[in-house]
Image 1 (tube, rainbow, N blue to C red):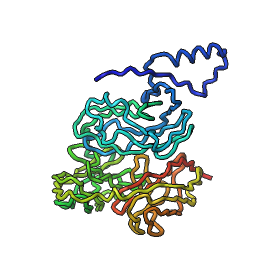
Image 2: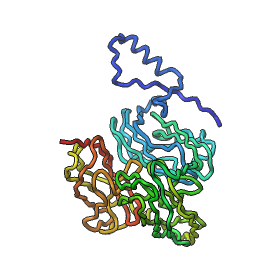
Image 3: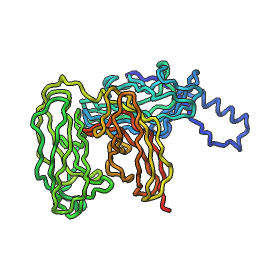
Length: 419
């Protein structure tokens, strides 16, 4: 691996007031900083590149990049960038987010299944953009680089994330009784053979054998997928943690129904689940089920669905436990008609997962009518916030099988207060 020296600078924030430094001395300080060859970390997780002659520059203000992944696991990455330069970043004009210095990766440049991400729209100076995209962890365990930076005409500029990801199965510790929680496996029903790309129902029955109720509030309790003692979303499956719609008292059994979509690649796949509260596993696992997936020539429907959020009316302040009108307008930018009763709007959490039981007291929002490709639809509904404090409101379109599609709406920070 070849080490490439980088010319880095320390960012001088606008808030810094140089009241006690005369103008000449300040100018000398700025000159030295701009011309020094340093290796300086900006907030530990990002590094600042040299300001290019082009005048392009960027700041990274937030990001969600995992520190650990299981081989083959999919993960939705989010990076929020502000245009702090002089030029507008024009979509389609060679401005995009790109893996920084691919030669530093000990494996291969396409290790994550993606190495560049287009900007979602034109970004003017001082404007920000939230870049959301999916990565797929490599199938070989190891420690991998994942550094992202803005690029214009193959020239990197601004701050870049300075991350490594440990890819490997993380063993879970299962407690037979965690804070009064315990579960007993009763039954699981999964088809033993499936056709590639098709959807199938799974029914799992678990008994609450502890002395604490499994509350349905706040999505604390869930039935989580596990394989080879690792907490993952199965590679190529749309299996995710399943939350309870009703509380389960001690001694009661819960029959949970949900759907999985068989992967497009034929093969033998193992499926298994276990109860979980927060980050803690407890109780018995379900029996392991081996599924024979055949076929593989089917074209995935996901490629035909797409959505773009155009506008939304979401107040930045609301009253606790009182109704509030919401309006969200979405464009069908795919080539598949959205059917009333099938596609719908759903609330999502910061991890871009659907949350039908939430503090907004709203589940699925149904289409008022069918929406042809290129058409618009406005969802009008009411929310009733059940928690005070700073809360985040964000939604996405969802197919009938529970798969999210298209870009999510802009996240809105709402302060919920009591009167």
